[in-house]
Image 1 (cartoon, rainbow, N blue to C red):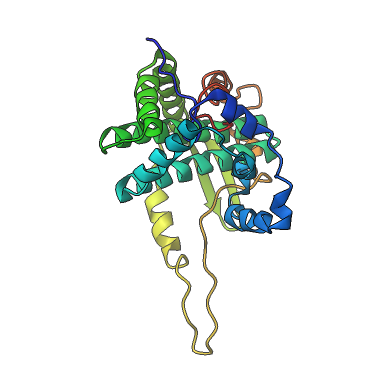
Image 2 (image 1 turned 180 degrees about the vertical axis):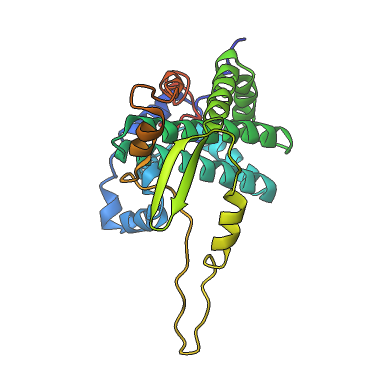
Length: 270
C-alpha cells in the first residue's frame, strides 16, 4: 500500500520543518523579552522541545496560510480535545520509555517497553478514528488524517499490534503462588491452588482510604504505584522458575524496528 505524503502539522514543506529542528532564537528575542514569553509557554512541556518552533519565522504566504488553517480547525472543541488526548497518550509513552531506561534488569526493561508500545498502538488507532469522525478543513489535519488511516492499515502496523497483543497474552498466562505465613512468604510454581487474591484485596481495602482521627491527624494510606527498579521481581522469578528458564518476552526487543520509526510523523521521537 502506498504511503500518504505528510510532512508536518505546522509546516507545509520539508525545508521549513528542517529549519525548525536546529533553529536559534532571533537576536531581538531578548531585547523585546519575547524569550520570557516563550519560556512561560513551554515551561511544563520541556520534553517536546518546542522552543525552536517559535524561533522560525515563516517567510512565505502559503506557509502562513497553511498554519492558520490548522489553528482554525483547532477552534473546534471536539478536535481540540482529541488532539489533547493523543498528546497525553504520547506523553505516557515517553514516560514509560524513560522509566525503562532507568531500570537495570533486562526483563523488567522489556516489559516497560512493551507497555509503551501497547499505549502507542492504541493512541494511534484512536486518533486515526477520531480524525475520521470530525469535519476537517485544513490541509494539515486532512493530510494527517489520511496518513494515519494509511498507517494503521499498513502491514507493519498491523503486525506490530498483533505481536504486542500476543506478548501481553503470553505474559498474562504466567502464574505463580505466594504463601504468606507470619512475617515470611514463599513463592512457588502454580499448581492449581485456590486463588485468594480477591480475599487479600478485600482485607487491605480499608487501608486504601485515609481516615481522620479524633486528634485531627490522618491514618496512613496505601497508594498503588508502579514497581520500583529496586523491586525483587528478578529474584522471585529465578526462585520460582529457575534462572535457566527466563520468561519469553524477547519479542519486545523485536518490536523496536516498527515502533518509534524516525520517518513516522507519529513517532515518539518526532
